[in-house]
Length: 368
Image (cartoon, rainbow, N blue to C red):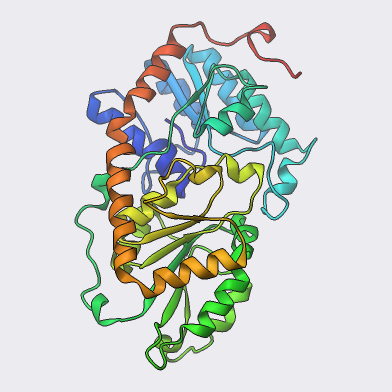
């Protein structure tokens, strides 16, 4: 299993299933940080490639990488399953990668080529599978799954209960700047109202991975951090991220998403974060969160009125937050642990091994 992206993508698409496959007894090789991927992959394939049956790799958007993977399959006779968790056909303009995936862009053409020549493609959700089916063959859904054990034994700050503030978490990469804009005005209003004075709740905003420019004004005090209303949690590796969330124990996890085709194909991994770190989940009611039941999360349209009303409820009602979180945790553990779904990976490998490798133009799905 060869990841081409680290952080959350590598964790959910490669490292969690790889660890689960190893527990089943599969002979699986993967490089999870801090392990180092071989610097000369071509040489590594020449020396080791023929002992493997399947390569499960993230999609590549550089022609040199696609050429190497195609040549490696020819040399080893392995089957190449290519994994993708992004709708590269509908990248929104606010995403910093948008210009790389416009019509005619080299990166998108290379990614499409990689998917076309693969023996099979694995995707995260049914909507994404539908998008990819028009130009990739043998598309199978392998959902993002929760690795419950990776959250075990993580401590909570001993003084967490002494801090009476209500902590609201946003966890996003730079690509979600446009999604965060959906709640900019309501956050401004809530910070103004819930200032901790005259018996009102005191909210603090935690931004993990990306701080939008409109929130900087709430973190101006460089000498006394406790005076600030917003805090940036720096990007870090996945184990540190989990430990950080558990330590901070946010009360509410907000997951706003703009309504577009790209987000309709995303998965609901923020629900796993909320379930395991102790937070109630509030999210936009789009395709990404369609699987989450209404008694496990507050799912909203992107109107100011809805975000204001339901966040006020959660800020002021600790019992409501706890009930939502309890329901969400039970739902996640009952439905989305990796042990419940790892058979889908096994089936995908069995299926692709039952057919000869792609070697001819006639074997691929051609452009419509």
